[in-house]
Length: 536
Image (tube, rainbow, N blue to C red; front, side):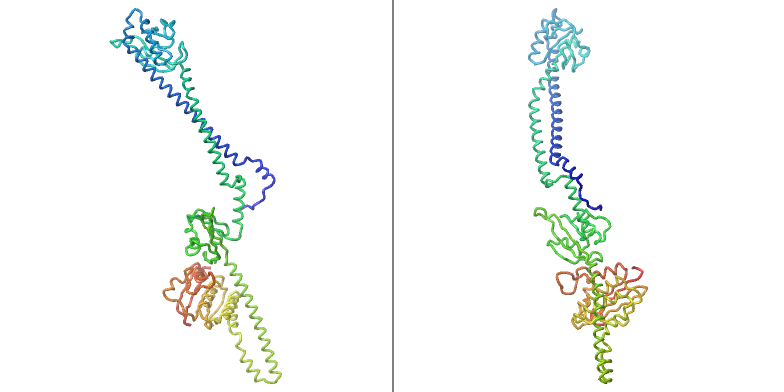
């Protein structure tokens, strides 16, 4: 991840000059509302215009067909002056139906009726061939009165012969006037809809601004980048789960501690977190601090906290700290410190012995000096055994000395089996196994008890055997003793039981070794571990 840098003056100036998010949202929504309203208005006007035209078409066809079927009109064609009969009747129908004109012609297209009496006897100005050929015509044409929507129907006599044509029409200007009468109401509704849309846009803008805490987009992006940089830059693992137990955040340190190579964000927690460890911790309902858990072979200190928004639980946050590195460092430091203290105590004790021997010699009590030397000659046998049997591997010697000192403080004797042979470095895995098995054994025995350790290391692998004279492990518990969280001992402190043997089991499994739990010759439990060299 690129390092987080502070925004320069150019970025600050750009943020100041940028249009605020609220104004941008409001303008965009108002534009969308107005565009939609205008489009809807044009479509509504078009539909209304089509509706008016269809209504007039039906009316004109009805009037034209009525004129063509009137017996009076048909009989007038055989009279000496058809116009005298047809003209008054056509005018009456025109006024009654509200059309612009009703025109009646003979077979040749000469008018017998027209709104302008002066044009009676003249041929029509538009083509009458469609109607005179026996077909009904409906359409827009331009005549002597102007452009109009018209309907033309043939007139037939009693025998069905076409003897003329009835034409009924209305000016386009009148259709437009009818549409104009409806537009104010339509515009009013559209204006009301636009006003409601603008008010809604204003409310939505205010709601969005409230949800974003009145932050601008670049400020939100800056905060997100800062948050990611901080979460992925801290030396503490952070794992966040939502209320559906899906991972929503795993920072870089958590990926390292959990041994993950790919970002598992979005995956179910049960496919990533380990059962009996972090998964069970996440599923508890109470906040928990400093719980020891295993992640693979790492000992982690985990904290569980419920994430809340406005007082409502929305998920779980787990924070992880690696205790393995601290444990190894403390173990190494304790080992070195123990070696130093033991050697210092031996040097001090040896000086005292020399003073006593020197005094006995000066007093010429040689027999007493010899007996004193024989009596104290066995001092430091435990330390000598440890150093003599394991000094090929200084780390192993330091660990055994540290464990011996700890056991001594608790009244437990730690003995190194005489069969111990160390011909090669035991390695960190063997030290982890030995340290946990010795701690487990020392905890199991009572004061005055004994723990015996056998270590055999060569080029083929490492064998570690730890026996104790404690109460042992019941047969029905041996199948579960290596499960995380299972312990036969009473709780010590707040947390931490049930981890050591589980860690030993995981190391053995990874190394493809062997682990046997049997009854010890000392009367307690015996743990026998073999770690092959080839699996290192």
